[in-house]
Image 1 (cartoon, rainbow, N blue to C red):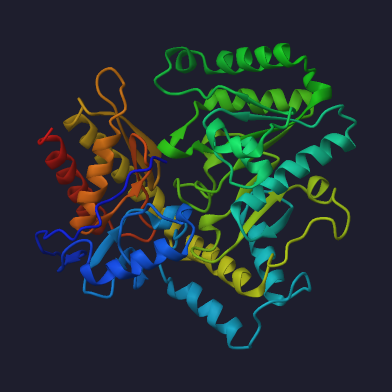
Image 2: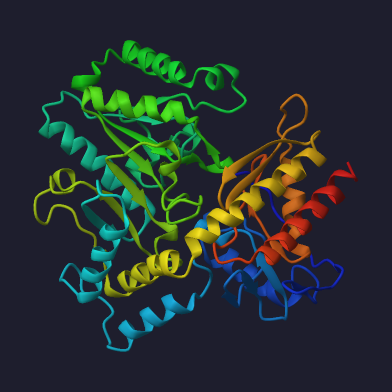
Length: 460
């Protein structure tokens, strides 16, 4: 993410009073500047850089401050609030546990944990026989790294080779950071695990990758094995894929992923998907990997798993999940009864309340409208990526020079007009409303986005 600093001087903006948005103050709100300044003073600056507003409450697909302003949310707080902010089914489930009271149980069993695991395994594909529950996404990807390598040891592999994809992102802890790509973001480590490798991502603007995606993978893995002197049967134990490339919601060609899956099966290599952004209905399917017609060995989930509570998980076969000995893989707050109740209610929202169907149905309208915006601003928007209710507009000029400044300005203008979008700090604007959004509200937000893009570009 770039170091772009949003304006902190209050601007008198046109007031808004639509069905789903309301702006009645200067933006940022003058009374909130002291709160922002205090946070900047007392908190690590790594936590800052977002649009300068102070949330007071969030309900369904709307965000409120304490001064009468209301924003349509096209972020889902970075793909977390899939079932909508403050979902009543989830809140009621959590309240029942708190009122017992039952807050924490470490790894001692609770009915809430048992009920959640039962529903989770029931609702997920049959190859997922067991789950390991955690608190944060990066814990889940670290766990997958451990499981892939322990399976490799069990199978007699010589090395714990993990093949990852350039441009992908898996978290900020040590192993997750090494599996991620951005070299600058892991300079702090001081070394790189010699058995973690990266092969190129098949970008849609790469003609070679698009015309022959299977060959693109085969050439990439062949070059890797040759340069590192690897025997895939003996030296590689896992593939780790982010289901789509995060910054731009960019999916792989299906044949590329199928080639990875087939290669893994031939050589005894586990296939893992990092489903943090794509899981639990975000792409119109329960899990994003389902768009590729493959069956992974492991998936790592978080974010939308509970729509706001700290829950992450790894799903896999009993054979793989049971490799670690008793007591050798746990976490203090894993599977606490509150998050398990939230996770179960979240699944019920997806299946019983129709949110999964809503994501698929509205997703088609959503992506169609983003493509319409691209056609209108074709000199500045080069690509539309995404599926379901996750999308990205990628801003490049005719020479594919990134137009990062336009994204910065559009994000800020949307804020002033009552719409929150995901500011990536790159040449993309990501959009991900809660799966509970109505078509009317979604289209209002898209209209605000389109007008904001027009107003920024027209002044260039």
